[in-house]
Amino acid sequence: MDPVTLGFILYLILILGVGFYTAHLTKSMKDFALGGQRLGPWVIAFSERASGESAWLILGLPGAALVAGLLEMWTVVGCISGITFSWFFIAKRLREATEEYSALTLPELFAKRFRDERGILRILASLIITFFFTFYVAAQFSGAGKVLNVTFGVTHMEGMLIGAVIIVFYTLMGGFLAVAWTDMVQGIIMIGTLVILPLVAFIEINAIPTVEFQFDASNLFAGQAGMAALAAAIGGLSWGLGYMGQPHLVTRFMAIDKASNIKISRRIAISWAVPAFFGSLLIGLTGYYLLQAGSMSYDGQVLTGVASLSDPEKLMPIMAQNLLHPWIAGIFISGAIAAMMSTADSQLLVSTTVLTEDLIGNFFQQLKNRFDLLAIGRVLTILIGVLAFYLAWQSTALVFEMVSYAWGGLGASFGPALLLTLWWKGISKTGVIAGMISGTLFTIIDLFGGWVTVRFSAFIIAFVAVYIFSILKPDNSSELNPN
Image (cartoon, rainbow, N blue to C red; front, side, top):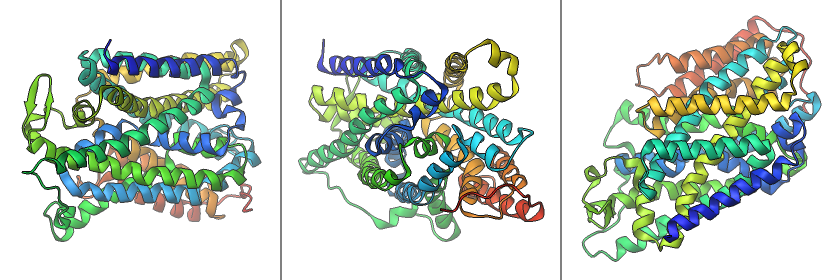
């Protein structure tokens, strides 16, 4: 058995072992949804980062940088800024609100905060989360198919099936505890991949006398000027807006053992994000020069130029196989799988939890009385996984494109509503509903036809909607404790 295969199998045994172990610790919906709120700052920080950066960071961003070059620097800056903002302005207040209102999910927090007795907020938020997360999980399954195809020669379909079965299984078994602890392991592997691989690529480039790696600041706008250059920069920076509205990330803030530990987690998370994002960008940039020099091969053929790579999102595993010792390559390719698993499992978990806790637990009393909610949650995990797999199977979109769509939709639907709920006393239930609906609607309907990215336009429209409708129709809901 070759080292790459052996390393990958050992990694899978470790992950599945965590799933079996945490199954014994998962006894209630609070355990399943938030790990019983007993996880410390290191686990939460690594879990939030590993969940936040999926196949998109390991495959999508390097592939985009390979094609677009330094233009993707705006994406890197936007993402790091969004992560920092979210940890400073969302995390602590959300943890305090979670305790104040005894909420397990974001929809439940909104419902209790605004005394939503009719359940409109629960239903709307749960349906939006499930809709966009299905696309997001499908992107991770598609990414797994690509990595396993490059690494082991299995078909894309077989790779997706392997990834889907593993992810659904350990999410099903251990819930949040399984997800958080495997995220800790996966986050460590991911940061190793994103730091070491570009460094090795730099060394390889310097050893080629005909190649000189260089940064050209003019490429920051891909040769565009004026409004086109501004739109390009906003398109990258707008990724940062999505962080405060991602349910699978803000759930980490809700799950930490105590609000005072947020400061420790924040330092860890930001320290992880900076080298990880710049490393991902550099994989794409260095990969371009290595391909131009004909220094890499795939499937027995030498790759000569970007055009010789049929799918730019396969760059990272190809670089790992060409530049690293097989043992190291096996670990780092496991890092790519880790990125997908750590995000897909979190999204499966959140989707399952909101459907179980917020819909079935509140509106289907007979079903709740007949079956245990934890059992229902596990059945829904399988159903959502199957739906996401079917979508990945049928879709021809790149991982980058599917993640962009889901990320923008969730960020616009929940980001403005959550931010203003935590910081503005004048917000009303009507304003939150208007923000959720407009964020979803204007992600699906692109008003500007791609001139300005929908990640930006939908967020701004939703923010304005929350503000205007809160002014037009205020309510007397209990105010969030500002302390």
